[in-house]
Length: 137
Image (cartoon, rainbow, N blue to C red):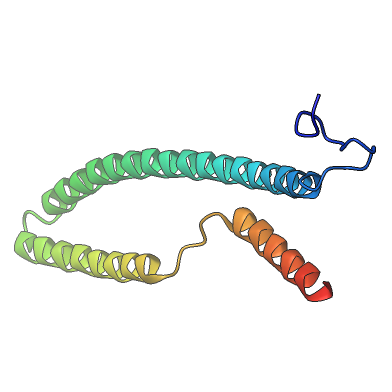
């Protein structure tokens, strides 16, 4: 057997490439851990998005039916005196609600997202640790 087939040279000392293999193994393990964390956070974000979408659709359907029934009720209530005013006031209320919702939606979309905070924190720790080790050497 020659020295390339095992991790030790002929005199029993570790081969020259062994430290590189060790560093590569540690980096591979750290990368695998961070990738697992990223995948878990991605799955959690996907589930949260699906749940939010389902609740939003339920809210939209229920609110739509409720608003239609409320409009019919109010117009019927004011049918004798002032049904046109009732429809106008309802339209103004709905435009006001739409304006507030548009402002809040714009604010929510312009706010920077906080996706994958745990993954980014772990990667920052790794970077700081590697920088500290590089300064020591």
